[in-house]
Image (cartoon, rainbow, N blue to C red; front, side, top):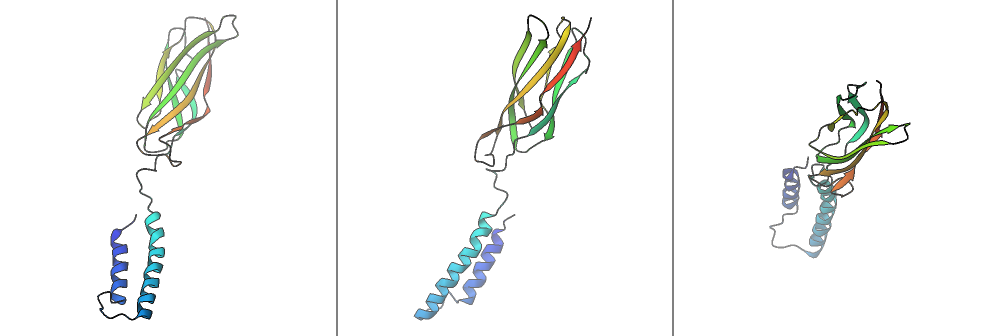
Length: 175
């Protein structure tokens, strides 16, 4: 954390050493004082630039490892809660938009439910759906989207993409 008092103490000490209030300075003394002041500025510059508490560039997008459903083996008509589990929470973001698709495979007519969701707050996103009354193998696929932050992300963007390693979960609905 940068402390303004450290910098001002350095400059005050320097000013006392070169006796900045001295009225008679010869040319060589003035030249060496200017060079010393320039050297101090070069030393102080990285101190100012290395501050890590810049609130405008400290947001990090979350990453996700998988989608988990509860109950894990749902029956027809069950209400299922899906949770997108964190791999890394990130920080200082406040909203994520994502899409999910529930599809039935292996049938002549495909069954699809699709939805766009928004999760507010730095928490694992959750949503619910009702299991169809149709027997079959189903796949729930989640695609993470844009994460919004109240401050800039490290690359200077106001929004970034979240990633998910395994965005699909499969389950079977039997009679």
